[in-house]
Image (cartoon, rainbow over all chains, first blue to last red; front, side, top):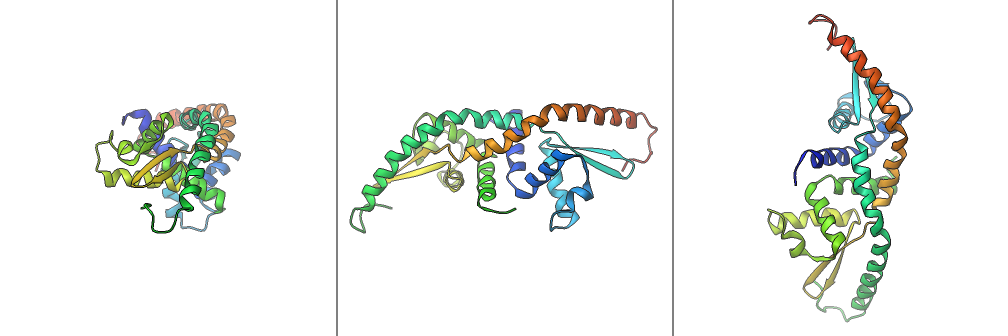
Length: 121
Length: 121
């Protein structure tokens, strides 16, 4: 189960699971940024911002171009493709989820109407 | 920046950033499972599997129906919608990423052809 594609999905979803990193990607979608410009809008140290950038790099979502002392970060959105395809597969379940949940919620309502101290754990 | 929608995205992407949790969702997409049946295929303790299930519940991707002593887990794919929409926005950048990266890689090739000990850091 743990293969290269799976590890790539782990890294991409992990990278996207943070509001600072998502905001960095939004800013990079407008144009490439130096590391310090990319870090500037966030109320955190450059060290903390750099850690977020490294998480994005490990996921392949940011590429760093080094010219002399300047590090320019570029968005590479391609690794999102696998994540998008993975999630797209579940679109078919949204409506089924609704039917399924309706049944579930009705059962919960029925259970809630039982006297307190019944068989719920 | 940190609002309810953002926290929901954090929770969904975090839940998807693990191969065991993704496999659990795949199994739930086929049919609802009891907690022990959902945990069974994985080489881990029931406690460890339960932690993964709780991460999925916190993201709203799994709903638990409690009937007596039996806990039945149901897939609720709806919270993926926000994540899918977020990623879909970046599809437009895939081709731009390619052009941008071509320029970047050419620059890197040119830099690699410089003598060692040059101005890279």
